[in-house]
Image 1: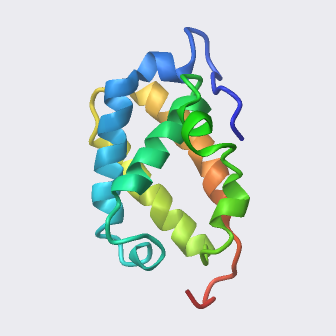
Image 2: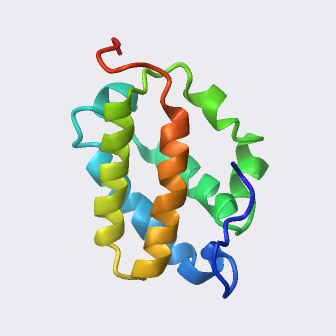
Amino acid sequence: MTAPLSLTTGGSLYDRIGPDALAALVSRFYDLVAREPLLTPIFPADLTLTAEKQLAFLSGFLGGPPLYHQRFGHPRLRARHLPFTITPARAQAWLSCMRAALDATPEIGAEDGQELFTALSRVATHMVNAPEGAQT
């Protein structure tokens, strides 16, 4: 899940979005996550490091510098998320926050935003590790 993402022509998605717009997206996203009742039980109260990790991961995932690998090692996404109860509803809540953050980030064009959202939808589905109603 860490191969550079480029489903269209014109450079990597990271090159098309740019680091500043990506940072703005991550900031808006975690502002929303902090207010999402389905997600707050599985996130720390202070989302600073979480946002830094997300930005570093997305950088490499989208074809930019491998910042996550350099700072934290291999992402091992599924393994790192197994300690948390991630139900289909939580995955959808996470995606809803991302969709809203993308919509609120005009620096990211609609086509690039859709490409990113499609890729993250696959990742979110892959992170589900518990059925609905599972305890946190």
